[in-house]
Structures are given as structure tokens and as C-alpha cells.
Image (tube, rainbow, N blue to C red):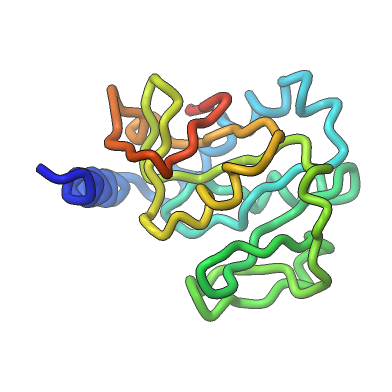
Length: 180
């Protein structure tokens, strides 16, 4: 099977598994993940962290972002064409719904000091024990992550952690993966 076919099959398998969990169950699993992140010394020391505004099937980030918005600079991605642009989260009132994925995105000026980001919390469809990540297939994150020195923390539900995921030369490994 070709690598793209393998990736497609894993995405389908995980999409089906996600249907077995209610939003409340996913939120509880997400809370357990962020409890672990909050205990990391790297997290406690960081001033600038990039996260993502979660979709309903992803590790839920909204509570975490709002909890730390006044304590740390929170950067969120905005989809523009084939790339992610970064913007500072300045509160719910400054969010707009994206045309690309129908999720919240900050509506403000671009954050261009990407070298100042200490930690990036990275979503994924699936991860494996070798720190590989399988995304949704658009390579938005891989393009961004290949040029960063930030600590890359993949977050996923326990059922998204696999023995191995199909990868190619464009896929960027995580530094750490946290699951519930």
C-alpha cells in the first residue's frame, strides 16, 4: 500500500473511534492531558506558547487557553491559503470564525517572532511511540514545525496513540507526546 493510502486508512480508523466518545468524555480526557502539561518545568518557565483553537473532535484547548491568556502570551494559528499564519490570542471577543475550517481564529495583527515561541502544542490525527505525528493531510503544521526550535508537544487522546503511524520525509517528529 502506498504511504498516502496508509495515511488515509489511519485517518479513517481514528475518525471512526472518535465517534465512540461524547464531547464531555473528550473534554475530561483533554483536562487530564493539560494537567500533565501544566506540571512540566518547560511550561512553567515559558512566556510564549503556541496552541490551537480546537475543533470538536480534537483535544479540547479552549479552557486551557483562557486559563493562561493573562499569564502567558498565547499564539494561535490562522489558516491562510496553504500556510499557517500566527496571531496573538487576546480574548474570546477578538475571535472570528474561519472560512477554512469553521473554527475560531484570533482577529488581530500577525505574530512574526516565531523564534520567541518556547512551546508549541500540536494537534494530530494519530501519534506513535517513535514521536511521529500524522496530521490531517494538508502539511500546515509540518511546514511550520520544520523551522522551529520550540519544544513540540503533540497532544492526543489515548486511542490516537498507535504502535506506529505512516510517515514520509516531510513529517516532523514531536519532542514529546502527551495523552490522557
